Image (tube, rainbow, N blue to C red; front, side, top):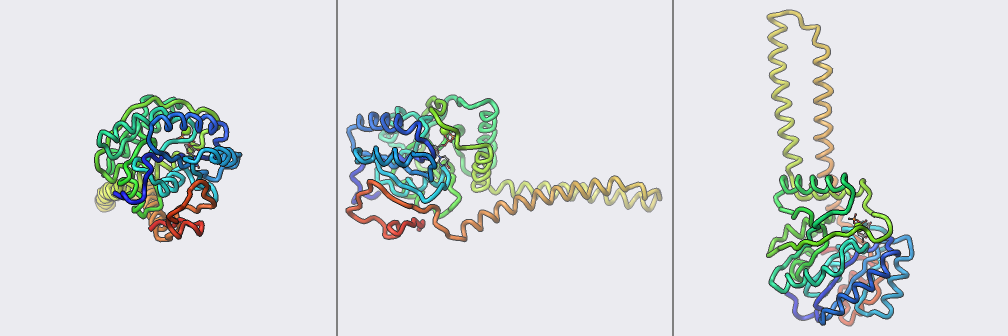
Length: 331
Ligand code: UDP
Ligand code: MG
């Protein structure tokens, strides 16, 4: 643990993308809750390329609230990367992550802290009841069930990124070099003492959901593929059984050819087999492509995000020379 640098006890990281409607209330609530804790804190707001006036609201607030700091990313990098950027610059001994749309109520933070004080290294918040539509709820359910069945790491069902991590966990996450960040996945992956607490997830306070179905599917694919090789292996099994059936088919056809002499009628069978096997091959190739795409992402060694500006980080001890140039490459 790094005892030398930090005098901050709590850090809260909040990704912000077009949240101008909720921000004023969120900031107000946060300050109430955090200042009631009687320990030092910082709130790191990551502006993920918002197109509305979120940044202006944040900067105005930050001006007379020194514990609030702003990371302004150079463009929209996505929720998970915004969280990663925030985590990278935290200093607190206990680091919390929450959404900026008031779906993760600030009132839950003290409960997370309680567990941390009781000795847990990761405390994730579990949604008691999703307020989203039936279809979305079913989709989430199925996703977590499938993920847990096929991956080596158990990712808690119904826990999002909302939660708390001890400093040592955050330091571990910072060392993980991967670019496809699925924060709740790597958070489980590191191990240590983890626990969950339940809370009611409210509906989005205002503004639009930023996760369209397309983005959710992408997130799900990231989760499945970064945490499991099972889809790849599944293809091998499917391929093997299909080839097995095909082999039997060949024997049957040969038998007919030599002993029954009525072979020209097999046109349909041939067509069906070709199409079927072609389909299987395409799925297999697509899957391979997914993994290869990820390998490609990793070997490019690009920085995960680019910081355009920092506000409120008074760097007496000038943290990391790389960050000053605007880039934040991961070690
Ligand atoms: N968000 C972000 N970048 C994005 C999309 C979302 O920083 O590209 C933030 C958003 O401002 C919010 C959080 O991530 O604070 C979760 O987004 P949203 O509420 O749309 O997701 P959901 O509640 O459906 O998980
Ligand atoms: Mg939300």
